[in-house]
Length: 280
Image (tube, rainbow, N blue to C red; front, side, top):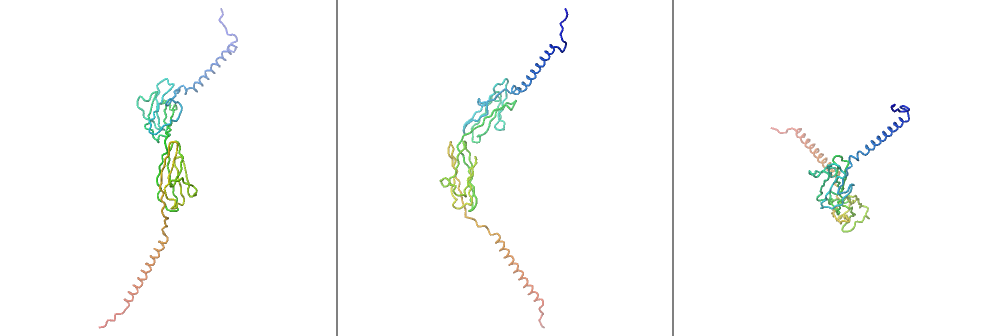
């Protein structure tokens, strides 16, 4: 029996089918490789992190004086995962046993300074896998500031009232227990989120008195008083006149000394020229 033969040689229909199959398989393998490369980061970092069971970045309302616990857990992990905590950009020191798969930190007590601070939990082997929580510390207005130094009449003076509040507060200036009217163009109020300023131009004696910064929010009201003292207008020291008078006095004394010296020299000269009239 003759062995089987391929009809048509290497360029026949059968060989063409083999080449088409080989080309299609290569294309599929190439596409699979590209897909694997695209999904590789997700395959490697398929772990998700959650803070207090929330996997997205979020804010956490709280209040001063409370103790706030933050729990970070690794989800979808197939091996033990080391976790790291950061307060803003600084890494938090964790005890042994509080780093693998689950980790917790405690903010106690919460303070006003913690408002807006972010705490971030990161995967140790891939820091791009992370989740953050930002503390939203709610507190009534807090005011601070110093009395301005006494100023003279016609001077410019600024009263500064520093404000901290969450939620934001409505601010106003009062004078002698009445809302300050800005009818006088010499008064100007400047306000930012952190400070309320009252600027008085060409201060007069009538501007002296008690000024109060008032801040109101949904959590309460706070007041801060400032005492403004206006001194009598200072007469400028006549420096030029004093210098001119001193020059005049100096020149007068100098001329007097010169004249006296001339008279002394004349008398001395006459004494030398007088003949000796003593006779025996």
